[in-house]
Length: 279
Image 1: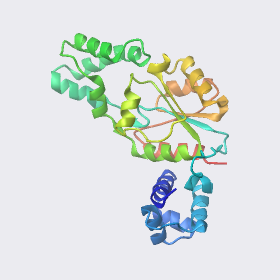
Image 2: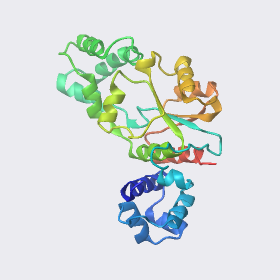
Image 3: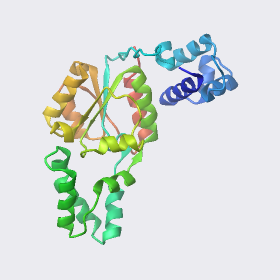
Image 4: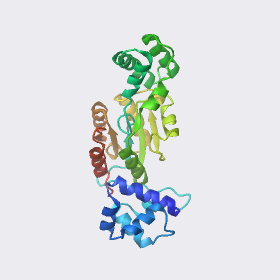
């Protein structure tokens, strides 16, 4: 790992732990200028002893902080509570929901926002489980609202906002555990969101996309698929989701669960971080 990558990795891990540079310096007994330079990538080959001090404070192994040798994959950890795999929901968890898309569409078409939203939800499940295509979804919405064909994907992409606190958390979690996405979502949206950098740019061990597997949460089938793909036992899986219904379904499967409140992301991230404290 070069000094620039190390600096970025260290900064993400620090923020995921909820630490300022000053707080990390105090805990690791480092000068502020040294840490700031390492995070900027201004120090070539920083002392291994310094990096060890930082990794100890962050609760990470040295390999997890600096990365494994080229060509090798990091060995993933187990949390104190036994978690090995973390699934994150997307809407309401990694990105703030897209209700303002309804408002924008109402302003552009003159159709009442509540009518647009009611029509949307009438067809949402069908497109999210792959029963109808995005083209059919757009046609049905346009027909019901008596407007010209719309491109819902574009309205959605323009309306959602990434949740910065979750971006840092997922990036850190992916260096310590296997992480994946488990989401009710429309066809092609995940690829487009990754392309536009709207969700954390990490290596996901698996992505369980409802439109591809043909089931939506809280259907038991989608959890069975996700569990199989994780390669872990139920009690080793954590689901972070903003829907209490989805959380309860996962809990019935024997999974660990945490409800995410996107109105209080910092509090939610703190709870997730605590649950994922490495052993």
